Image (cartoon, rainbow, N blue to C red; front, side, top):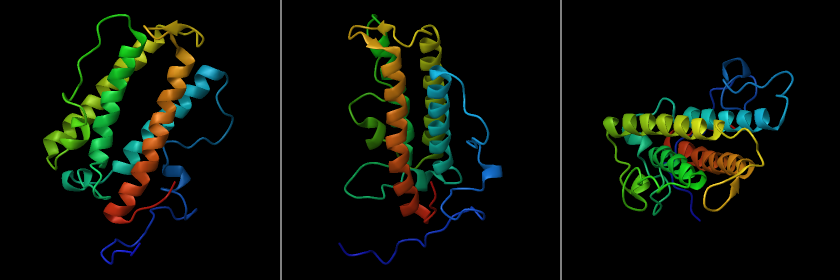
Length: 189
């Protein structure tokens, strides 16, 4: 495959470790010292770190960059990822509930990506949606401290849902790495 000449030069903000996103003293995920005790704390820590990673990959970009679809013909963009994860957080609450499912946040299938347009109001709304949906799912799961408890119509365990949440964020943080590099060349784990 031919490399496009208009690709931005790769760069990192880090000065200590050139393969990092930022220097350790500026990294909110800095995990120096002893790790958390217990399975719940470990799972929560990984989820928090991946949530922060996604935010870091989007930091400093304008609405046009957030909506940029860097790998045509894909509709994936950083803004689409933020909207998608808000939608997924809402859907996970459907997994653990016996009630009628909550409606889709953005309506029709794939609207989270397809309607991720370069408008600052859309970007701001996506972040607000993500924060609200994360908090609601966190609160719903906090009512079930037994990781082995099975919930919802499909009887999914709390543990399985937490691991799935981590996997979803981790996978999309990998996408965010590639999208960000295509947008402005910034790299780092």
